[in-house]
Length: 485
Image (cartoon, rainbow, N blue to C red):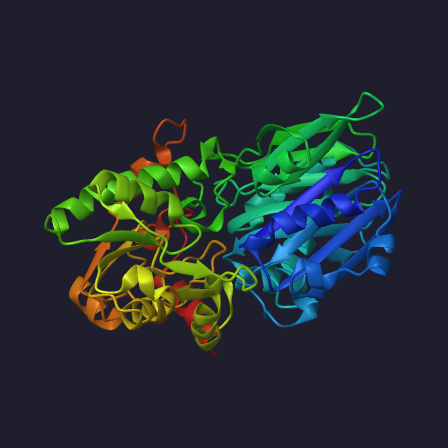
């Protein structure tokens, strides 16, 4: 999971990209990078850490140009602590290309061999983004007739990329002296949204980003989502071109975006994240009603922030008082996207504090957006009991995460997942709680898809059905061994 943004304007865009990355910081906090294009000259700065830490005034002054892109990274492929793994990545031929990517390629073993043997290209990192860039560069080189590049060359190259690449990818690229390219995998697993606004020259400035909140916050109007398999090219002059480049595109957006990853004020694939989370709470309440006795719970409490909408609806539907028992330290990042179990565990205590006045002698129903590894949940339960809770019932607005997520979320090891190969009673024992209640897969699907034009979701981490159809047990074993080694 990462956050990406690309802008093409009549004005300098370095500050606009920086501000956009601040809005996308929740999507990654390992590293960040910005690249701009001034004519045919690239300027780039990237660094480990969060956006506010990464850019000094001198860095911003060097990021000249009116076309650019930015990235915040949450490592799912490649080391989290190496600056060499930070995006964007650059190749000098053809023309010079800089690319950022949100997603995860699932055929990197085959690509590594092809790039070295067939394409005679070298990658200097373990990042699948650098592989994606080199595949695109190779295909673009093969499509060029003469020296003049046109949109059809680019679209033909993207079509070939779709044929060679497997997995999830929402990508943005700068082509030196030509413009900004965006493309999305044939299943549209990771999000990408287009916006535009009229500038002082009465022409359109364009923005493409992972989430719609970036578009609205920068005073652009949302145009639409990039379609699965589609490529968008915007020339340096602002001319807009688009083409479907996949043979059989079908939209299967990641359900975990709506559960946890996206900000609630975003709209993805025409679906309000906030309203989807409200519906998750409504449907979860129905399951809770069948699992607990009347009067068994005194208060409903959320784990701030992403579970608040669901918790509010649970309290409303059950007719039980809603209370805020956990106070959040906003200067600690999202614990789910921190590397390593020990660091996550320590950060929970730094991030949350339980107020004893809200817990003492009460039967508490805690609502979280999801329970993945159980690290955060274990600490929260202990905090609630230490604060004086008489009884703790834990609920999840998402179903049990029983399978690895291979499309851009750091859940590669089945052994880390608390629900993997465990019964509900075993999970309760592991978490030291009185009762555990999960959302049903069918209810999560209904909550997200209701009143939308969508027909499908990627639910692979919940049901083990991988939408790309090429994920084998051998591959999952390999990913897990790579992760644990």
